[in-house]
Length: 329
Image (cartoon, rainbow, N blue to C red; front, side):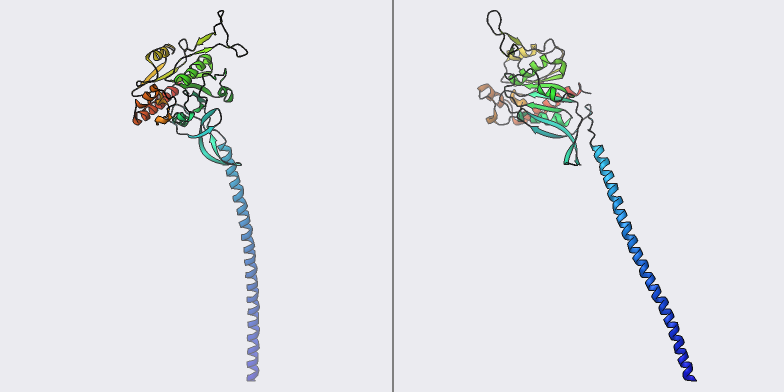
């Protein structure tokens, strides 16, 4: 009897245990299924999140790219600090103001600057365009496009039209030049195209005469068979003109300076740089780089020390910018 009761209890315990085990097993199976569902759901959410991130990133980058395409405006009345992109070809050294670095479909590039004014500058005889880089960089940082022509004999190779006027039709140009070559070229260009330019920047210039050519490029002659020449002058012009001279110029004679002054507009602006020399308007700091090996050029170079040369270039930048900013909007 007792054995039967014990057996009954054992069977009852087994039944309960098996029931609980089935419930436990079902619970474990259910938890596993839930975990699988959770894993699948998390995977789906991760994929959706990744897709959303990619879409939003692409949208943001596209919006930035669209915004970066707009050129940066220039306020010429304020002190600017644009970066400068320098490009050199066979005819000129070009200093172009640029803004921030941007990235587009074609890789790294620079945001454009909507410059509205520029300078075409003619070099002195036998002086490399790079010797005026100090001026090109300084003006470009303020938002001006600067084109320094590489023709070392610009007056003798004068062309009827300055190519920069056609290449940059939306830019209003100043004309500049140095010495008897570049200065003379600038005076002639200014006198013949006054309506196309904003003003003239003349550094120790010399006014010269040029031959009158016929339609075939041949010199015209008067009734005595003498070639007709015209003196280049701005005396009857109202063109705003900046004239810079050095009080230690050993190249120009007093008569040449007097003649130059007589060819300037009556309302021109003149600045005489103390300690300034003739070739000091170019960054020539070695006697070996003197453009013309003549005694007066040697004396001109030796008339100022390195500090005076640096001061002359600094004042050239200062006077040029003051003059230009008064004429730009």
